[in-house]
Image 1: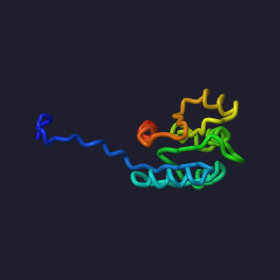
Image 2: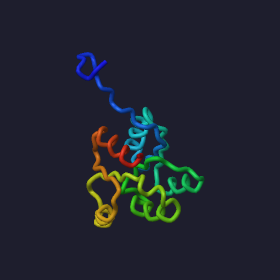
Image 3: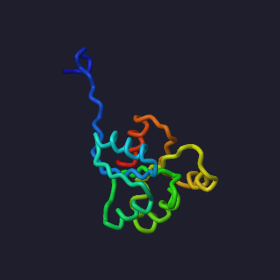
Length: 136
């Protein structure tokens, strides 16, 4: 079958199945992302930065990490700083999710890092693209 054949339809590339970590204190966001992403990936859900650090201490590693910026207790920037000591190899795999209304500290943090960043609400295709960037 050739590309000029009218019955030819190119197949979309199937994303590589990966191990994803979703860190968000908002249960609806966390569970929704887990549900959507679990179709294509193995997903672990965390409600806090300290829970994520516990997973890293157990030796768990991920192909991509989706992390909320604003969380009670340990926020995204603090988690990132702690990860730089305990799992520096995971930093480049982290995508930060923001709700738009964040602190000056969070804005400065996002300006100084090179990580992917997504503003909530985001389109699923944009999320797939961001995941592909950090998983390659």
